[in-house]
Length: 197
Image (cartoon, rainbow, N blue to C red; front, side, top):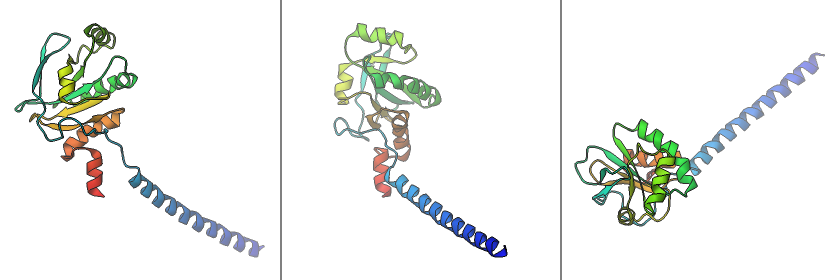
């Protein structure tokens, strides 16, 4: 009887030790996987003004009739230009996120929506999506100056009038990566990760 208890205790401890080694090995593999699969920031395209360059200075009428100044040094606030389309499903998915960002970052950031196309279509979208609290610009000139080719696209302009971050954004994480890049003083989160590696 005592031999059976001793044998079972030895086997139990052997199983516990094997499980401990397995858990440590898995924890190590998770750490390696986390390093390999780094967070994906906004996808930067090689066209348009580069991060750090002065943003184009424009004054554009919004759909509400007010004039909105884009770029320019000496602005007290940063601007997030978000390019969208009434027919873009991903753009529509990001609208609640933009509302949240507009509210949470209101101390330093103005969120401006931008697009081009038929005014009637955009006005209907502006009203139906309840975007009246955002400046909404219809300007081919703005999109051409920033070389926006795909949507949804965002450009973060600092209070000094320089482009701080930009790229295609499909999620909250990619949108927030623009703010992270600005805080870190890099063009993109990928650039920061490359510097660390």
